[in-house]
Length: 207
Image (cartoon, rainbow, N blue to C red; front, side, top):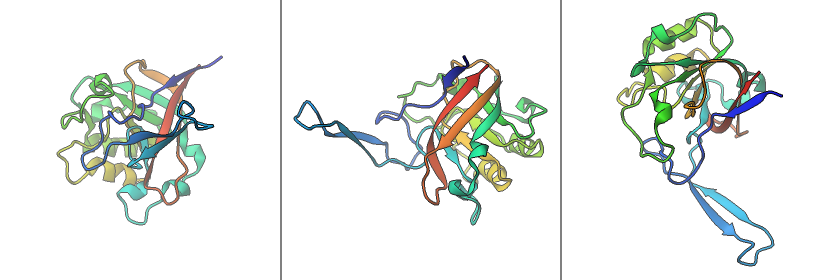
């Protein structure tokens, strides 16, 4: 029986959000205890890019594909989890032989608590690493915080490099409990119309 590892962030009102986004609010609108025949929770103010989510090329490239333009096959497939020791993912961290694969970077970010406030300093993917990932033909790049770009990069150079080449981005992963190595990734986003991104339940299958 294969082992399934959840690498998704839990959506809750105390989780960090990218600056400018409102935190999601989970509100109970019906309760069995209060006499309703059912329980019902409403999610309010949730960005399409909340916590664990996929970025489509349309997120930064005008006229590029949205999530509903992308075949479902691209949201699953062979993946490699790569340990990164430094404070930036550099070209030296990019493995060889990753054409068509999903490359997920496991960094010190994964040890940030799920309810800790947003940090402006986190491990990000350098523009040089992004260019090499494109040259090596990856399908998707994942990172264990809310953006592949540094918070101070107002040009969003890594986003533009990856998405401009049609490489998908998976942000907000939780990889602290995941050893480096080979897996199968399933990261299917919500089916939103004309979406530049969408929340995603991401799992790795081992074995």
